[in-house]
Amino acid sequence: MAHALHIATAAFYLLAALAAVAGLGLRVRAAQRAGAFLLAGGAILHAAAFWQLHTLLPTPSLTELPLASSLMAWLAVLSFLLLHARVRGLALAALVAPAAFLGAFAGAIWLSIRSGGAEELHPILAHLHVVLASAGFALLGVAGAAGALYLAHHRAIKAKRAAAQSALPSLEALDRANGAALALGFTLLSLGVLSGVLWVLESRGQLWPGGLHANATLLAWLLYAGVAVLRFGMHESARRAALQSACGFALLLLAVVGLRALP
Figure 1 (cartoon, one colour):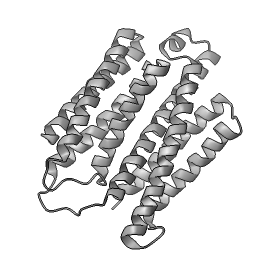
Figure 2 (cartoon, helix red, strand yellow):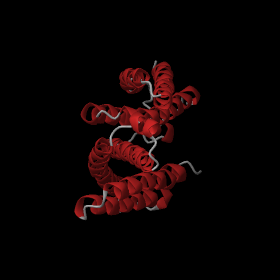
Figure 3 (tube, helix red, strand yellow):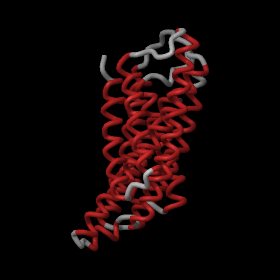
Figure 4 (cartoon, helix red, strand yellow):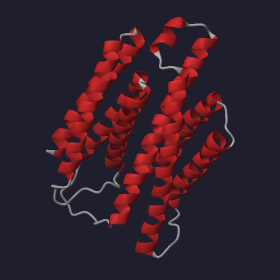
Protein backbone atom coordinates (compact mmCIF):
# COMPACT_ATOMS: atom_id res chain seq x y z
CA MET A 1 0.00 0.00 0.00
CA ALA A 2 2.84 2.43 0.83
CA HIS A 3 4.35 1.76 -2.61
CA ALA A 4 1.01 2.30 -4.40
CA LEU A 5 0.39 5.52 -2.46
CA HIS A 6 3.86 6.80 -3.36
CA ILE A 7 3.12 6.13 -7.05
CA ALA A 8 -0.24 7.91 -6.79
CA THR A 9 1.48 10.82 -5.01
CA ALA A 10 4.12 11.08 -7.73
CA ALA A 11 1.36 11.10 -10.36
CA PHE A 12 -0.42 13.98 -8.60
CA TYR A 13 2.82 15.93 -8.32
CA LEU A 14 3.61 15.32 -12.00
CA LEU A 15 0.20 16.60 -13.04
CA ALA A 16 0.68 19.58 -10.72
CA ALA A 17 4.05 20.30 -12.35
CA LEU A 18 2.56 20.18 -15.85
CA ALA A 19 -0.33 22.45 -14.86
CA ALA A 20 1.88 24.91 -12.99
CA VAL A 21 4.52 25.16 -15.72
CA ALA A 22 1.87 25.47 -18.45
CA GLY A 23 0.00 28.10 -16.45
CA LEU A 24 3.17 30.09 -15.86
CA GLY A 25 4.32 29.85 -19.47
CA LEU A 26 0.94 30.56 -21.02
CA ARG A 27 -0.09 33.02 -18.28
CA VAL A 28 -3.26 31.06 -17.52
CA ARG A 29 -4.17 31.69 -13.90
CA ALA A 30 -6.65 28.81 -13.76
CA ALA A 31 -3.93 26.30 -14.70
CA GLN A 32 -1.70 27.64 -11.93
CA ARG A 33 -4.53 27.29 -9.41
CA ALA A 34 -5.13 23.74 -10.65
CA GLY A 35 -1.45 23.01 -10.03
CA ALA A 36 -1.78 24.22 -6.44
CA PHE A 37 -4.89 22.07 -5.88
CA LEU A 38 -3.12 19.03 -7.32
CA LEU A 39 -0.19 19.66 -5.01
CA ALA A 40 -2.59 19.76 -2.05
CA GLY A 41 -4.14 16.46 -3.16
CA GLY A 42 -0.69 14.94 -3.59
CA ALA A 43 0.32 16.12 -0.11
CA ILE A 44 -2.68 14.28 1.40
CA LEU A 45 -1.73 11.08 -0.44
CA HIS A 46 1.88 11.59 0.60
CA ALA A 47 0.87 11.81 4.26
CA ALA A 48 -1.07 8.55 3.89
CA ALA A 49 1.96 6.92 2.24
CA PHE A 50 4.19 7.79 5.20
CA TRP A 51 1.54 6.55 7.59
CA GLN A 52 1.49 3.24 5.73
CA LEU A 53 5.27 2.92 6.03
CA HIS A 54 4.81 2.25 9.74
CA THR A 55 2.66 -0.81 8.96
CA LEU A 56 5.52 -2.49 7.08
CA LEU A 57 7.64 -5.09 8.80
CA PRO A 58 10.44 -4.30 9.16
CA THR A 59 9.67 -0.58 9.17
CA PRO A 60 11.84 1.24 6.59
CA SER A 61 14.22 3.83 7.98
CA LEU A 62 13.75 7.45 7.00
CA THR A 63 17.54 7.77 6.95
CA GLU A 64 17.55 5.99 3.58
CA LEU A 65 18.27 8.63 0.90
CA PRO A 66 15.20 7.91 -1.32
CA LEU A 67 12.81 8.04 1.64
CA ALA A 68 14.57 11.13 3.03
CA SER A 69 14.15 12.74 -0.42
CA SER A 70 10.47 11.80 -0.40
CA LEU A 71 10.06 13.30 3.08
CA MET A 72 11.77 16.54 1.99
CA ALA A 73 9.48 16.67 -1.05
CA TRP A 74 6.37 16.33 1.13
CA LEU A 75 7.55 19.00 3.56
CA ALA A 76 8.44 21.33 0.67
CA VAL A 77 4.90 20.98 -0.68
CA LEU A 78 3.41 21.69 2.75
CA SER A 79 5.69 24.73 3.07
CA PHE A 80 4.57 26.00 -0.34
CA LEU A 81 0.89 25.55 0.55
CA LEU A 82 1.33 27.44 3.83
CA LEU A 83 3.27 30.25 2.16
CA HIS A 84 0.81 30.43 -0.73
CA ALA A 85 -1.98 31.04 1.77
CA ARG A 86 -0.04 34.07 3.03
CA VAL A 87 1.65 35.58 -0.04
CA ARG A 88 -0.34 34.14 -3.00
CA GLY A 89 2.79 32.92 -4.78
CA LEU A 90 1.26 30.51 -7.30
CA ALA A 91 4.31 30.71 -9.56
CA LEU A 92 6.37 28.89 -6.92
CA ALA A 93 4.43 25.74 -7.80
CA ALA A 94 6.30 25.57 -11.12
CA LEU A 95 9.50 24.94 -9.14
CA VAL A 96 8.14 23.02 -6.15
CA ALA A 97 5.98 20.52 -8.05
CA PRO A 98 8.72 19.01 -10.29
CA ALA A 99 11.04 18.64 -7.29
CA ALA A 100 8.23 17.02 -5.29
CA PHE A 101 7.57 14.58 -8.14
CA LEU A 102 11.22 13.52 -8.21
CA GLY A 103 11.26 13.02 -4.43
CA ALA A 104 8.06 10.96 -4.34
CA PHE A 105 9.12 8.96 -7.40
CA ALA A 106 12.49 8.16 -5.78
CA GLY A 107 10.62 6.84 -2.73
CA ALA A 108 8.32 4.74 -4.92
CA ILE A 109 11.26 3.21 -6.80
CA TRP A 110 13.10 2.41 -3.58
CA LEU A 111 10.05 0.75 -2.07
CA SER A 112 9.56 -1.36 -5.20
CA ILE A 113 13.08 -2.82 -5.03
CA ARG A 114 13.40 -2.87 -1.25
CA SER A 115 14.67 -6.17 0.09
CA GLY A 116 12.72 -8.02 2.73
CA GLY A 117 15.67 -8.39 5.07
CA ALA A 118 15.73 -7.08 8.58
CA GLU A 119 16.84 -3.49 9.01
CA GLU A 120 18.71 -1.80 11.75
CA LEU A 121 16.49 -0.18 14.36
CA HIS A 122 17.06 3.55 14.81
CA PRO A 123 16.47 5.44 18.07
CA ILE A 124 14.03 8.30 18.32
CA LEU A 125 16.84 10.86 18.07
CA ALA A 126 17.74 9.48 14.63
CA HIS A 127 14.18 9.95 13.37
CA LEU A 128 14.00 13.40 14.99
CA HIS A 129 17.24 14.37 13.27
CA VAL A 130 15.96 13.22 9.86
CA VAL A 131 12.58 14.97 10.23
CA LEU A 132 14.03 18.27 11.47
CA ALA A 133 16.87 18.36 8.95
CA SER A 134 14.54 17.36 6.10
CA ALA A 135 12.05 20.06 7.08
CA GLY A 136 14.88 22.58 7.19
CA PHE A 137 16.18 21.55 3.77
CA ALA A 138 12.65 21.67 2.33
CA LEU A 139 12.00 25.20 3.60
CA LEU A 140 15.41 26.38 2.43
CA GLY A 141 14.49 24.93 -0.96
CA VAL A 142 11.32 27.04 -0.95
CA ALA A 143 13.43 30.07 0.01
CA GLY A 144 15.75 29.30 -2.90
CA ALA A 145 12.81 28.98 -5.30
CA ALA A 146 11.36 32.29 -4.11
CA GLY A 147 14.79 33.85 -4.54
CA ALA A 148 15.12 32.53 -8.09
CA LEU A 149 11.67 33.89 -9.02
CA TYR A 150 12.54 37.23 -7.40
CA LEU A 151 15.63 37.49 -9.59
CA ALA A 152 13.61 36.54 -12.69
CA HIS A 153 10.95 39.16 -11.88
CA HIS A 154 13.57 41.80 -11.15
CA ARG A 155 15.26 41.10 -14.49
CA ALA A 156 11.89 41.28 -16.28
CA ILE A 157 11.27 44.70 -14.74
CA LYS A 158 14.70 45.91 -15.82
CA ALA A 159 14.07 44.61 -19.35
CA LYS A 160 10.52 46.05 -19.31
CA ARG A 161 8.93 42.69 -20.19
CA ALA A 162 5.35 43.23 -19.07
CA ALA A 163 4.21 39.69 -19.97
CA ALA A 164 6.81 38.08 -17.72
CA GLN A 165 6.00 40.50 -14.90
CA SER A 166 2.28 39.68 -14.98
CA ALA A 167 2.98 35.93 -14.74
CA LEU A 168 5.02 36.23 -11.54
CA PRO A 169 4.10 37.22 -7.97
CA SER A 170 5.05 40.70 -6.85
CA LEU A 171 8.61 41.37 -5.66
CA GLU A 172 7.25 42.16 -2.19
CA ALA A 173 5.41 38.81 -1.97
CA LEU A 174 8.46 36.86 -3.13
CA ASP A 175 10.69 38.71 -0.66
CA ARG A 176 8.30 37.91 2.20
CA ALA A 177 8.18 34.24 1.16
CA ASN A 178 11.97 34.14 0.97
CA GLY A 179 12.40 35.71 4.40
CA ALA A 180 9.82 33.51 6.13
CA ALA A 181 11.11 30.27 4.57
CA LEU A 182 14.73 31.18 5.30
CA ALA A 183 14.05 32.02 8.96
CA LEU A 184 12.05 28.87 9.69
CA GLY A 185 14.21 26.64 7.48
CA PHE A 186 17.47 27.70 9.14
CA THR A 187 15.90 27.23 12.59
CA LEU A 188 14.80 23.69 11.76
CA LEU A 189 18.13 22.85 10.13
CA SER A 190 19.88 24.04 13.31
CA LEU A 191 17.66 21.80 15.42
CA GLY A 192 18.37 18.96 12.98
CA VAL A 193 22.12 19.40 13.40
CA LEU A 194 21.73 19.55 17.19
CA SER A 195 19.60 16.40 17.34
CA GLY A 196 22.12 14.65 15.07
CA VAL A 197 24.95 15.54 17.45
CA LEU A 198 22.93 14.21 20.40
CA TRP A 199 22.12 11.02 18.47
CA VAL A 200 25.79 10.34 17.70
CA LEU A 201 26.81 11.21 21.26
CA GLU A 202 24.25 8.77 22.66
CA SER A 203 24.90 5.91 20.23
CA ARG A 204 28.67 6.18 19.70
CA GLY A 205 29.96 8.32 22.53
CA GLN A 206 31.38 10.82 20.02
CA LEU A 207 30.64 14.52 19.77
CA TRP A 208 30.97 14.58 15.96
CA PRO A 209 30.84 11.55 13.63
CA GLY A 210 32.95 12.99 10.81
CA GLY A 211 32.47 11.62 7.32
CA LEU A 212 31.32 13.31 4.13
CA HIS A 213 27.63 13.63 4.99
CA ALA A 214 28.13 15.05 8.49
CA ASN A 215 30.82 17.48 7.38
CA ALA A 216 28.77 18.59 4.35
CA THR A 217 25.75 19.19 6.61
CA LEU A 218 27.89 21.30 8.93
CA LEU A 219 29.22 23.24 5.93
CA ALA A 220 25.65 23.84 4.73
CA TRP A 221 24.66 25.06 8.21
CA LEU A 222 27.60 27.49 8.30
CA LEU A 223 26.69 28.72 4.82
CA TYR A 224 23.10 29.46 5.82
CA ALA A 225 24.19 30.96 9.12
CA GLY A 226 26.04 33.55 7.04
CA VAL A 227 23.02 34.07 4.79
CA ALA A 228 20.74 34.51 7.82
CA VAL A 229 23.12 37.01 9.46
CA LEU A 230 23.31 39.07 6.25
CA ARG A 231 19.54 38.94 5.72
CA PHE A 232 18.27 39.60 9.24
CA GLY A 233 21.28 41.07 11.07
CA MET A 234 22.78 43.37 8.45
CA HIS A 235 19.51 44.04 6.54
CA GLU A 236 20.84 42.93 3.17
CA SER A 237 18.92 44.24 0.16
CA ALA A 238 16.08 42.06 -1.12
CA ARG A 239 17.85 41.33 -4.41
CA ARG A 240 21.09 40.26 -2.72
CA ALA A 241 19.11 38.12 -0.25
CA ALA A 242 17.31 36.45 -3.15
CA LEU A 243 20.60 35.76 -4.92
CA GLN A 244 22.15 34.31 -1.77
CA SER A 245 19.14 32.06 -1.13
CA ALA A 246 19.11 30.74 -4.70
CA CYS A 247 22.87 30.10 -4.79
CA GLY A 248 22.86 28.78 -1.23
CA PHE A 249 20.32 26.09 -1.99
CA ALA A 250 22.20 25.05 -5.14
CA LEU A 251 25.32 24.58 -3.01
CA LEU A 252 23.26 22.79 -0.37
CA LEU A 253 22.06 20.22 -2.89
CA LEU A 254 25.60 19.70 -4.12
CA ALA A 255 27.13 19.48 -0.66
CA VAL A 256 24.55 17.34 1.14
CA VAL A 257 22.41 15.37 -1.31
CA GLY A 258 25.18 14.90 -3.89
CA LEU A 259 27.75 13.68 -1.38
CA ARG A 260 25.23 11.45 0.36
CA ALA A 261 24.53 9.69 -2.93
CA LEU A 262 28.19 8.72 -3.22
CA PRO A 263 29.04 5.12 -2.26
